[in-house]
Image (cartoon, rainbow over all chains, first blue to last red; front, side, top):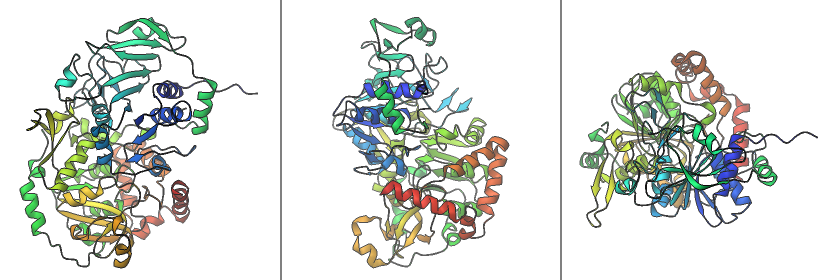
Length: 257
Length: 320
């Protein structure tokens, strides 16, 4: 009998992301870990979840072993209920129909702002990144946003080089003052723990660590001053059932490897 | 600020449509004749999204004319944008995202050209660019939206906000984008240019109404009766279309919903060329796949019947 494969970072993010979703919600999801997280939640505790994908998909079912690489290909639309135009799918979010959105990013700062545009200034960047895609729209327009990311010091910066996707901007009520009247980042799910945002300052706050991770370790991997909740919880490790479902969706571990 | 104010001049854009021949006439022509309408310096918008329904037949025909000074816009730009850069046809890219996808990593070509300042990279959010085309399709200079507010993207193009005249709220006045030319690929059209698309609509219908000149390639040319039997499927009216070309497998190796799947192995081969030789890898690819084949048939022969058949089979599995 062979040992079960170790839990990968993407599987971990998918499991922890799935637990953040509730039944009866609508979720704006992407490819990779967000897709795995929403499909997992739907198969476990959220059977009435409706997934929406930025290429223009409402209510897909996705075919195990045929998962999409991009948000706008046939695989992403498998057994969908509706294929609206891209502009219209985002306008449904602007209208308020999308409860939750999932995004990630190359850089994230203490206010939950994300950079996927350029490292080292926009005009003549040191590294040109691919761009916003729909991330800016999802974080601007969904009812709440969950950020899924690997936790590395190079990703967690005091101030992002460029605000591609606005979290709480400079904190306080600056997001609202910019005209973003709705939503905001409710959760940051990383490979080390779970984070919320302190209500007044809107600075990132550690609320839970994953099994075997210490608060000091999270601090060491987070270059900005991190707020820590009075009582930091410990998450339950991924269950055999959660991993079994993920691995049946992605048998070749293309997205969870 | 990189917005070209000509792109938002709704009055001039309206006059161009008024002056455009809108006769219900034969639109069917050759790829070469169709792309002859593109002039150096034009803003060219592409339909589809990333590696789906990309009008690659039209793009290849356009690049064979060795154009210069083009602006190229597309919601998610795939490697056709890199062809534009390396062939020195494109000096400005307008998009929300450029690359192929996670498995292929960051685009080395985008990095090289943007980091050295050789191309203007005007980034919008996905909806932001969609609303630019939508505003233009509606014939208005801007549309109010809540998206992009507060972000660095507002400064890239030179976006402005307005106070809502009713509620006083701050809104992003997303500027219209009236492209000179649209290149689109559809599933079927009649000879008059009435076009039907299956599956994802993406932004094609808006782009068709936004552009001054619309060039369409179609998998299939059907009778006028066929279009009239399912008018609810028609998303682009014939009067908007200037030229129509019959190009089966017109987006291959990209996907065409329900007909053929993309060929990711081909993308990997393309990227391997860049990893070993940089821009020269793209140039070699262009010689082989863009400038080389004299006809579309010769182009498809480079892939072979087996690959095309397998792509058809996968599409059947994915849409049945």
